[in-house]
Image 1 (spheres, rainbow, N blue to C red):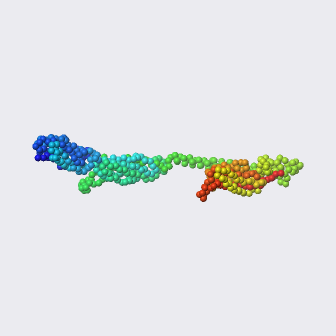
Image 2 (cartoon, rainbow, N blue to C red):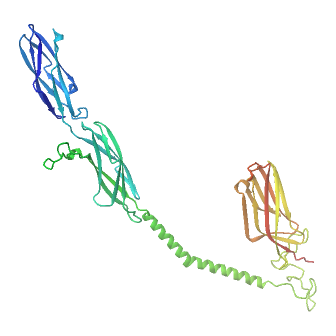
Image 3 (tube, helix red, strand yellow):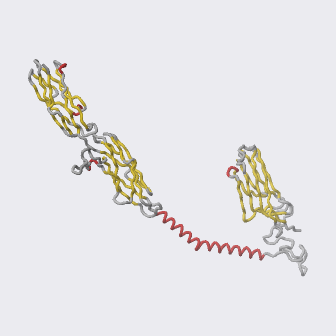
Length: 450
């Protein structure tokens, strides 16, 4: 005597999201009343139920229960063939347990979830996007990305060209949209495009003939993503307006301002020449202080022992001014002042103008070849010409159109305050600050008076 159980169908086919049923017949071959527990075992147990799950039978009787299969439409219900078993466990005689089996075929389905980020890009020539996709189907497969645009203004590149995804797996590709030509001027252009995401079309085995068409994925299995590339012009509108304004200013300068400046400069030069020509020179053959013809002393006239209008006083030693330079006596001259200063100390060097001379300075070149730190001050007589921080220069030159005049017996002085010696080209820090000053100009004789 034993217990027997038998499933109604040897094989079952069920689609994810659908329902399939079969029957299970249980027979009590014992001589006692027996209760049976019915339990689903195998890969299909998560979505298979038995109704009712417990039955009681008299000896020699049987009953039929319903087996209900409802796989979900998700990657959890993998496509393929799986064994289904129902364990029939007697309560009084558990050693007589039996497990009838059948084969369940879960049909495949395809479903993709895709997104593009960002949806809009701006650029001069190209835009880059990220396209992600997730396989929500129950079968592995390859996914391809097909970008397209209404016109032929964009070219596309997808890297990688396709993805192999298992059920529930996600992946990402890089998409590049590139315009065929640049926009140099004008407005920005908008190029909308679409990317179709779908499974790779592969003909199933046995369907190679022309009479049996290949399976074509439905529109729901091919999501379409919308993107946009905003192509910017190289030169915006405001730049064109700025260029036009600059050109107008340049034309106004050459047409109006420049001629006026030239005319003013020419008039100033002519006035200076006229004033110089009108200034009288010393009387020919007359000695200073001698009476003029007719016995009248030649006092109060230029060149007659008293200075004329606007004429400096003759500069004797200790006198109030440098005196007039003798025309034609000027010679180019230069001098170099070498100043070495101990750290955190001050020192100076000078060049004294010879007696009977006047020095017109036109050029000064200061050299801080070590890169010292501190302060350098240049004075001409009692006049300070330049004060400059040493750390702001290595070589500095100054030029004057109107010379700086240094009278006789006065000096051009360089005063250096050393805060930190620098490092010369040798690479070893110097023990002292070291500066050189070269002054250049015209050294002229002074016209001496009585």
